Amino acid sequence: MNKLALTLTALLIFACSNNDDVSPTDIPELAGTWLLVEEYNDPGDGSGDFMEIDSKKTIQFLKDGIFSSNGKLCHLDTATGPNTSGKYVVNDTLNEFSFENYLFSEGCDFEDYKIYIHLDGPSLILTYPCIEGCAQKYKKK
Image (cartoon, rainbow, N blue to C red; front, side, top):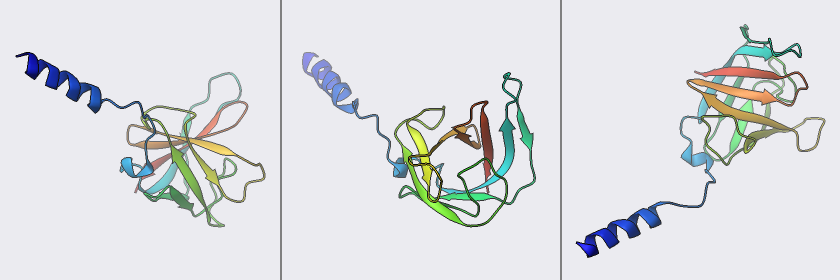
């Protein structure tokens, strides 16, 4: 009985890892094409809410940490064109907001401009660095 208990304890210890980094290939639900459907703009008092918008802007996430979009992602914008691309980093669970999950879009005016990403149920949320709070919600196509 002691050998069985020792074996189970050893398995539990080795099954648990201290490495919390998550590879983009470990996030299959992020891979694919997402369509912009809502936008959040807070006036500064916390009363903002997501509002439906009509846009054809999309983001495609590949499993190798690369994304592409048919519109610029440097600013809160619903317009399509010109096409942009960049890299995304996933170091934490995507099911809640974390400063460890973000994307870098090429062609932005600011160096190291991060847009934070997380999943909220079936929606992908892009949170921009705004003073009052602003974000975009995408649905998978």
